[in-house]
Amino acid sequence: MDVINMNPNRRTMSGGVKKIIKWVAIGLAVLIIATSVVGYVPAGYVGVAVTMGSVSQTVRQEGVYVKIPFFQQIRTMEARTQKVEWSDPNTPITAASKDLQDVYILAVVTYHISAERAPRIFQTIGMDYADKKVVPLTLNAIKTHTGKYNVAEILNNREKITNDVNNDVAAQLLANDIILENVSLVNIDFRTEYKEAIELKQIAEKQVETQRYTLEKQALEAQQQVKKAEADKQAQILSAEAEKQAKILEGEGIEEFNKKITQSITEDLLKYKELQNQEKAIERWNGQYPSVVAGGDSVPLIQVPADSGSSTAGAGAAGSSENN
Image (cartoon, rainbow, N blue to C red; front, top):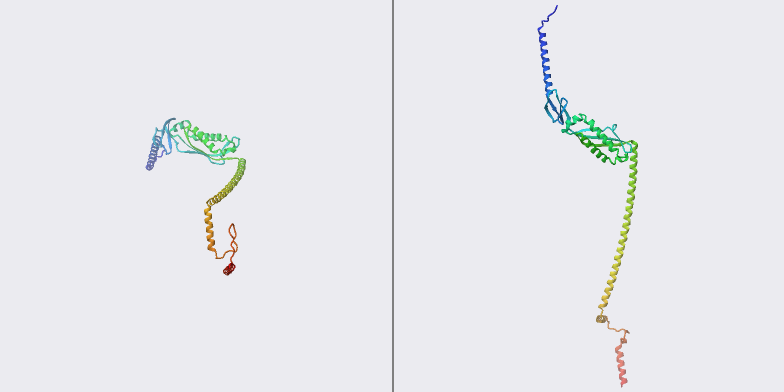
C-alpha cells in the first residue's frame, strides 16, 4: 500500500532548489556566451585572431574586442623584449676551438618579435618561436665563430667573435620576423689545464716584455748619457773658442791702444813733457847744486864749497897783488 507524503514544506523546499539551479545555469550560460563574444589583449602583447583554424593577418592591439562566439579565438603574443640566457656555470654553451679544444661560454640573448608580423610568426613558426628559432640559431652562430680561432686566440678576439655572432644571428632571425637586440658573451672559459697554460704563457710574455722594457730603458739612458757628453764637449769647445776669441780681441785691443799712443807721441809733445819735468825739478830744488852732473853733452858743474865767499875774496886779492 502506497504512502502519500502530505508534507507541504518539503514540496516548497524542492521547488526553491530547482529555481536556484535554474538561475545558476542561466548565469553560467550568459557568462559562457559573454566570454565567447569578448576578446581581450593585455598590455605589451598583440592579438592574432584565429577563426576555425584560419589565421587573420590583421593584428589586434591591446584592449577588448568582440569576436564570433565559439568559432573565433584571440591568441596573444608578447611584443616586448624577451630574453634567453645561459647563465649557469654548470650548464654553459660548449663549443670547440679551431684546434679542437673545449670552450665554455655563458651568454644572454635579447630580442622581440615584429609586432606587425605576429600573424605570420604564429602561422609559420608557432608560439614556441624562441625554442625553434632564437635558441638554435644563437647556439649555431656562437659555435661557428668560436671555431674560427685557436684556444689561445679566442680571448684576444672576443670582441670580434661577439660582433660576428650578433651580425649572423640578427640576419637569420630577421628572416623569421624576429628582431635581435643583442647577443652578449658574458663569460668565456676553458679547461683548467689550458687556463694554467695560458696563464703561464701570459706570465712569460709579461717577463719578456719587462725585460724588453728594461733593455730599451737602459739603451735610452745610454743614449742620453752620450748626448749629454756630446753636449758637454760642445759646450767646452764653445767655451774655449770664446775664451780664445776674447784673448785675441784683448791682444788686438792692447796692440791697437799702443799703436794709437805711439802715433800720438810727437817731438812737440816730447819737448813739452821735458819742460814739464824740468819745471817739476826746479820746484823740488833746495838751492844746492849737485857735486857732479853728467849726461850727454852738458858741461859738468864744479861744486862750490860752503865758504866760497872768503875764498873768492882771497883769490881776488891775490890777483890784485900779482897784477901790481
